Amino acid sequence: MKRIILIFSMLLLAACGNEQVNEKKSENNGTKKREPTVERAKETEETKDPAEEALSRMDQEEKIEQLLYVGVDGTKLTPEDTEMIRNGVGGVLVLGGNVSDERQLKQLVNAIHQANEAPFPLFVGVDEEGGRVTRLPAPIPKFPAAAVVGAKNDERLAYDIGSGLATTTSHFGFNMDFAPVLDVNSNPGNPIIGDRALSSDPEAVARLGIAWMRGLAEADVVPVVKHFPGHGDTTVDSHVSLPKISKSRKQIEEMELVPFRKAISAGADVVMVAHILYPVLDPEKPSSLSKKIVGGLLRDDLGFDGVVITDDLAMGAISESYGTEEAALTSLLAGTDMVMFSNASSESRESLIHSIKESVENGELPASELDEKVLRIIRVKQKYDLTEAASTEAASTLVEQTEQLIGRTR
Image 1: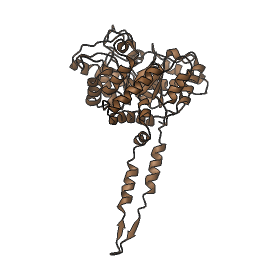
Image 2 (image 1 turned 90 degrees about the horizontal axis):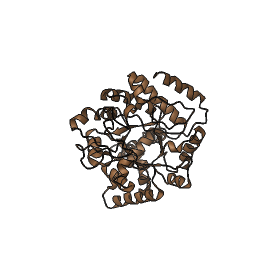
Image 3 (image 1 turned 180 degrees about the horizontal axis):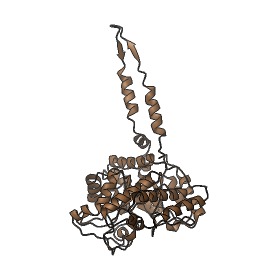
Image 4 (image 1 turned 90 degrees about the vertical axis):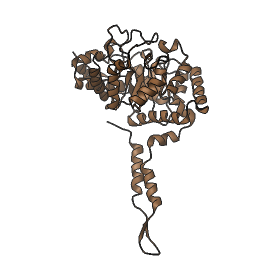
């Protein structure tokens, strides 16, 4: 896998340059004396953290901008969109309403990359799961639903599906895919998950989902496992209103959490947290806004130290009861690293930035916690090669490869 190694190489060269230690004879006894300051300098060079170095060059507003994952309007960037990206947002979300055809989508994603003036790339993400949830235009064939892949019970196939989705999304310039779905299809009446899940068996979801995740990651597209703590047993669509899952902690541990726990152990870099009320975990706040669930369950109990991103805060589950600014700030205080909103105006975005600044200044969000959030984001951005824009090649070869892969699921 391609990795961003320039900074590491520079540090290594600097360290090697200090290997020759200045030694001199003592005027009194003729013995050689090693200069301790040189040794300390060498140790300092060897222990520099590239992410911390990048963080040290950022001012407060640049840090806050990295916490925002935003949507754009229409099929091309508006001047307001361009200015927002130029200011240094952490990520840009592309939805179905932003897509008309292959040429247009490539131009849009290229424009997003080109507008970025931050010292490192931004995430450009898309929901490309296959089945009902797909954004890519013709002539790219549509991948089958996750349940079709899961029915084959073949880890190699799941890996290749992840790799294939990485190839098709990166053809358009995307570097992040909000997949795989790690929800367990445990409720046949679920109106939103259903065949988006790999299986009704949590162990199968874990095994196949991890393979899918690795297929994406090893092709340099950042996988985002979702929807933590689990959306598979809901009877309400969180796009419309807030679902509620009334299970015991033991039931949740044995079903919903199994795939997430195993994916985290397998090296998941990004987790998307859902908008669901789990009364046994937090009787008051939905998972995306809950410190008990994000800070307690996900961070402390499951040991996840990667990037936590919310599902879209414009969804009915949140917008019915919270304003965008209130929800975003509450979520960040709960322990998320990036807040996603697909339709926030420039005014609401500026208001949110101001609110986050105030929370840092008054100690509600300690500056050290802000730095930790940004460090996690930077580390993922440094781990993957996110710099490539949309391909200029024709899609014909890609179409043929994709059709062959899809044929293996039939």
